Length: 221
Ligand SMILES: C[S@@+](CC[C@H](N)C(=O)[O-])C[C@H]1O[C@@H](n2cnc3c(N)ncnc32)[C@H](O)[C@@H]1O
Image (cartoon, rainbow, N blue to C red; front, side, top):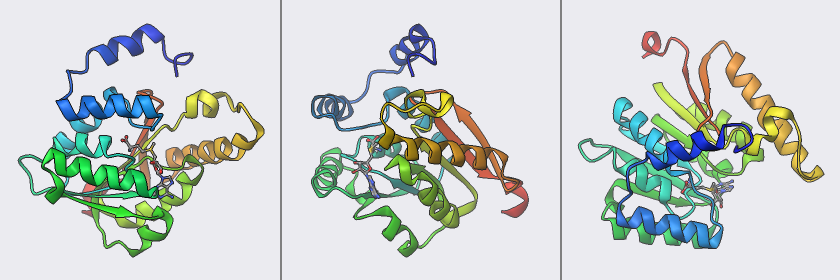
């Protein structure tokens, strides 16, 4: 994203994110050292803001990794009955996330699920008030369709990394095997920004976020 968004602006926004708690800071360093993907802190701050406004009771996350983003979400649940269900495919990451939730003292507010979201999503009982999609980018279309079926009438769906390092913007890919993923994400963005049932905004924060709600949600809820 540094070529798309002015690098000084990115650094300025990052520097303005308040210092994170001990465990979040520790996980940032772990993710960096072990190349484990995680949301950027400025994305965490934005999602915390969104959750604090929206006050969801039921949150669903697709792509836990070691629980960094989930722990950001728990900060918005302190004065609510909120609960998070989060799905991770990789067993080692799932176990590390479970340990991190225990360490943070929030395990009771989280249901971590191990498995493929494509298989697990149809088994879940909605509705969810807030759904965050942050797993395999080439499958975002399937995740979005399955998440949509679980979304509460006034629910919000957010997807992370929608610009795919900017490849989605100028339709380039560093290697031929990335082409399908880039084309799929671009098609999905065109679909969700033009679909009559959806109201979507694309936000150039981190590697890009999409925020979608049902159109006329207030009339349907
Ligand atoms: C970008 S990371 C998630 C980062 C996490 N949200 C955070 O910010 O801390 C994506 C995760 O999705 C997991 N994943 C990929 N495909 C998946 C699938 N089909 N079902 C569930 N998890 C999947 C990967 O193993 C990886 O840990």
